[in-house]
Length: 398
Image (cartoon, rainbow, N blue to C red; front, side, top):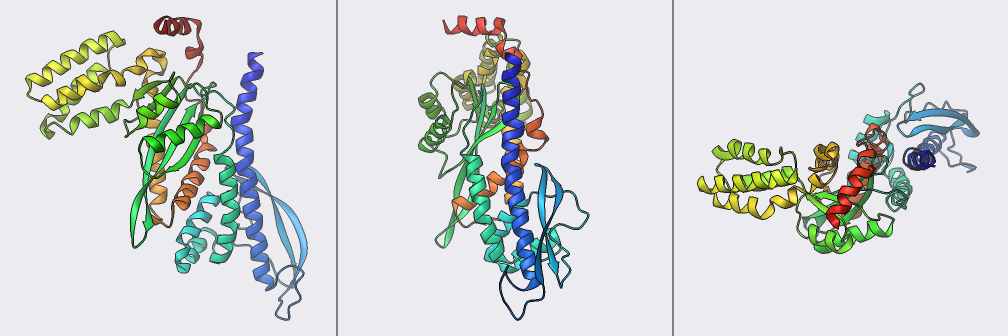
């Protein structure tokens, strides 16, 4: 019985979502090919035009390998003119992230020259900004479908964080945040389960984001990992009152470093790391008291206060299987994705609006999800489901 459940979950992650992306890429590429065929014959399909250079003569099928799987291309046949597509070279068999490229071109479409430059680099020809705009409307629809899909799995561990980007506002610009959530499902695979615009990282934004995840099917996460963003902890307590909160250890260290002299950073870092190197939570709490006392002796009063006030929320991971500690005590898995998103969005600079920022971020997230990142097991979840661990948790709750 359990084998069937595991097979179903893997199919949802590795087949259903990948099929969604594949269909989007297939539709986009075929639309580009048809647009290029119309440009070559100098007339739309069935149009009577004296300036026509050739005629459409149907299609032939061709398989094209993408990161989302093999897609079926309907290559236009032309009479009177040779169809040499520069969008996909005759013998090319792999694509870059098509959706991302299209959205980037659309966003850069305020400059027609920029649109033409990007398409020429990617495909060796210039695609008009009008064509890009029309194709992006379809792409946005596919991304929205993926973004709002039902969450049919269980996600014991959830990582949350926000990414700050800039958008135009009047004659200037303002910061906007894209809130992102990654879930580790019951089979141990990572999945990007949510991305939404939050005008700013505050309690209302976080609450709306978490409620949205819950409405789509995120039920009973056991541990939520994040940095201590404004309003995040309060929102978690309201929406998922039974979930535990783990403050990212790395962010905690950085917060302590802000109130000590630079020359003391290495020494204090070793002291803090010693707390999280203990074998259990009781030993870690005792070590934290010793570190706090040492910091007061060193006249680092503010640092000592931070350790006293915040250390417990960085030790929550110790209530979970030791085999998972290294990966659930920090928000590193999401931090790495955030860096990739910022690198990818840097080419745009300032976005025209929040929707454009969200769409480009989601295009990158979909691309990451369907790469090895989403197809590689991240944690062995049998440790979390073991009878021994379940009894230990139940005894602590009782």
